[in-house]
Length: 270
Image (tube, rainbow, N blue to C red; front, side, top):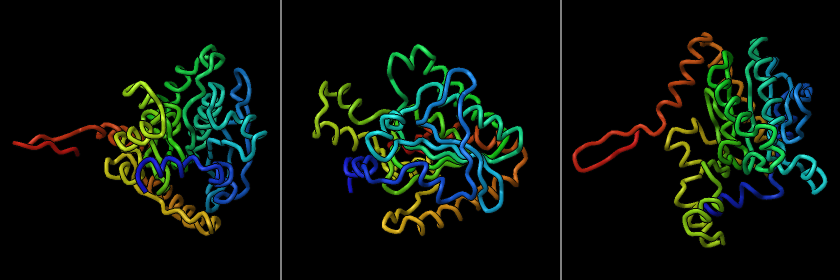
């Protein structure tokens, strides 16, 4: 599949959502609510659970399963209170030395006037800033669409995994097409998707994702068992690091993005 086909697959209505992964992978998940400032955003499904008997904090973007639930969850586009709820639980996880595991699936943060009035940009910036200094392991999994800063707000992690048919992009292909070609139609969106290099293989090649997770949605429980084992191994590896080493590793991981080397007659990204 090309980039545009991967994009359509990542957005498919029948694709498993964040809550489905949480309930299949973790034991005894307990959802927690509210940002302690304004309210509760159902686009963020978050709480505490066990991963192979280890207590963890989970944070998942949730799109919903039908029209009613999708409207209630704002189609997986969080408002400021969603990001503040996520950050509240991250800081709680840091306090109790629990690893944080995030599941990312969003077109982007909600762009409405109400979200802007309540500080959408600041909420995203604070989430990214605080995640970079979080003194506990953080792992993020792109399970569908990782769109713009709305996705990065839950993906500033020590390790990032991405499903093979998921996509991750600085801007939606529709938004890119509107900017570059002044129109958004299937032809320009497909062109933009290919130019943006949004696929899982692209993310692994660029070092944005550590690993691509194979998909087997026809046997979702088996796929989740394999993902659970991979997440548990990654958590065990990160828990071997000190708090200072965790923060330094996360910082250096992001510092490497966009670095390149020049040689006579050629340019190579590293």
